[in-house]
Length: 173
Length: 98
Image (cartoon, rainbow over all chains, first blue to last red; front, side, top):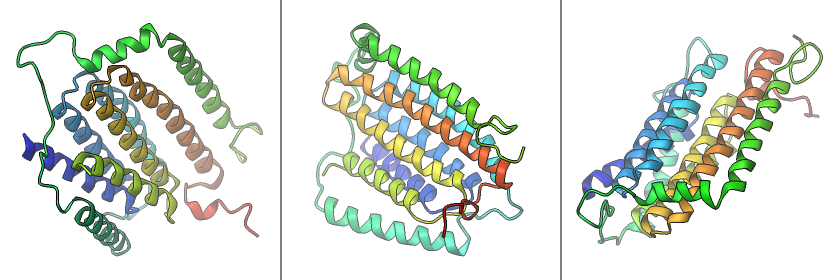
């Protein structure tokens, strides 16, 4: 279990370096998809059940899908992968930086790498993450309304931004 | 520092550096922004799970909702840029350059 958490954390780092090192958006989106899947794995290892599920559905299944097909807007004949020279320089710099930081700050870590998955040892119905989100619907109702209104506002913002014909963000169409 | 804390802190810093430095496409800057959001979601979720403060589990959900707002606005800007300039290259966004 500790080893699984160690591997997942390493893959999170690899994904972050892969996205931050300026490849073409095709490959950066792929790195982010892997990163979000692995992030869900980390949350599961630490005992969450509802939060990683929500993350998988909304982030990976909603937002990443939209980013993936929006990557068609940045199409180019020879996309830069991670083998390209300029991208490799960024990767080397970030790996060096992250390696030095980890060595300095975490070099003496001899403690427990893993997470606490479950403390009771039996099947539970009401788990922690689920109860917290239920509290959002209960006492945090106004915040939910505010979030919904914000999302509605964003819908109109997006529609106005992509409206053409001399209004909005598109000038020539 | 614990390994998990080090991980999401480093992810945040890497995403921030990726957003700040020069890049070719606007969309890859938005993807670095999504890395930032991912690290914040992990951090707040692990806060709720590890410290057993259950009510904080609302924070990642609301963070996800507002991050969806921001991602969709960014993508609308990418579409507008592609419609105006033909591509989303950052070097085309130079109207204010002297």
